[in-house]
Length: 400
Ligand SMILES: CC(=O)SCCNC(=O)CCNC(=O)[C@H](O)C(C)(C)COP(=O)(O)OP(=O)(O)OC[C@H]1O[C@@H](n2cnc3c(N)ncnc32)[C@H](O)[C@@H]1OP(=O)(O)O
Image 1: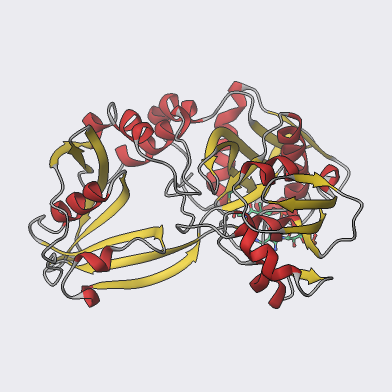
Image 2: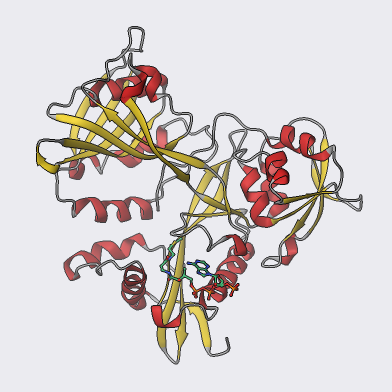
């Protein structure tokens, strides 16, 4: 691929990038009247364009956020989104050049992590992104779902319309407990983007805000649709975050009492979110699907490893990273330190596999058993399992 030029797009080129991205996903462009608002979802100087003979044929962008890593530290993460290549230019290496330019730029900015949601699973592994969490979708049969005695009562719930809640939600979200690995900050760019999506919804978008003794501590954003006419109303939860057990119970107590609703649907939830434990009939809560959540990329391998909690003995990891070769090397990883070493490697793995283990979602021994990690010392997988173990399950809960 020789004729493609990659550069950062100027402000007046963002509309075309947005159009190209949406068309690559087969979605209509943002309407003229919505563009002045939508353009604010773009962090300045963070959208790349690939040009062929002056025409935009590919794009990718990112914005700054932080992600909680095991142990509770919040680490800078570039949230990568808006990736698309014009259909008449695919499979010629345009994405490869965009990814290389973007990751090189992020490494120069010293951002330790990058994260994205992949439209298709085979795309991003070659660029060092690994599927770093697992999520599940749920359907709750509302009329069967009776809360058990002993479920915390929760505090008060106030119902707001989306447009009115938007002023309050960023502050509420920012104040929630975010000690679970995988949770991320929601910068202004994220809220602008989600506002653009929800304002064009075809049913009222409502926000239940839960408050406990110290003020707002959780919220659920939802709307109700009738996919089969008046027979069956489905309440779809778009966003639910609870900072305390009481807020979790209180929000569910509220959701289960919304009139006319047959089913409550949620997607991309943490595997260990205990909805079924709230109700007498655990089968009222059906798991309707599982999938991968956020894909993670360790842009700075030693900095990212050092930032997370590690427990147990030590292990030497040889990491192979052709896209960001500065990461390639052998590291001694222990509870106390992460450093390069001349010692022989016990485990050899690619950058994407390291990202799969990083948040504790995939145990190194499982990754070894399936051929993703090369085992050079048979004792090492068990030691690595201890080092990388993390509880609770990693979960992001913020789609971008
Ligand atoms: C974070 C997000 O925004 S997710 C949204 C991603 N965008 C989309 O899904 C929109 C529709 N798809 C597209 O725009 C494009 O097909 C892209 C962006 C996925 C790929 O762009 P391309 O320029 O075709 O990728 P590129 O040519 O660099 O491919 C590099 C390698 O990845 C492989 N690859 C690329 N896309 C896919 C795919 N969807 N499935 C399987 N393999 C793929 C290519 O075959 C190639 O492999 P090779 O090196 O062994 O030959």
